[in-house]
Length: 130
Image (cartoon, rainbow, N blue to C red):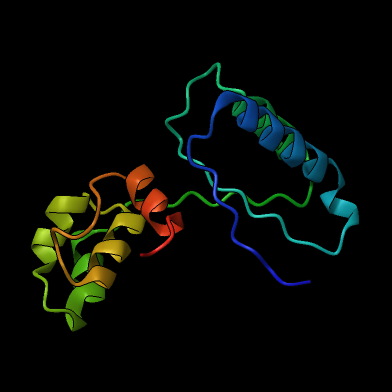
């Protein structure tokens, strides 16, 4: 089986429900499958967001490992950006050390070429290139 990289940005409500249904199905069965299920989300989701129920379900599994991705320090951004032409201090100022945004800016080698939000950056990754 070939790994894939599904994206879940902010889909329309009916697609969100379907996505949550599929994730619930997988979460209940992942312990019996020869598979790894990787879920990512932002901690800023509202208390009444439907994803909270899924997180509760997943947290009951003995095989779940939660990894909190902290913001990068200015020293880490300097180290990562040492081989680019960008000023690491500018990269840090723009991204506040958000690991996803830091890598996107460094990869683009253009401090103004990356969308200002994660949602826009992810959307740009999934748009067909013309």
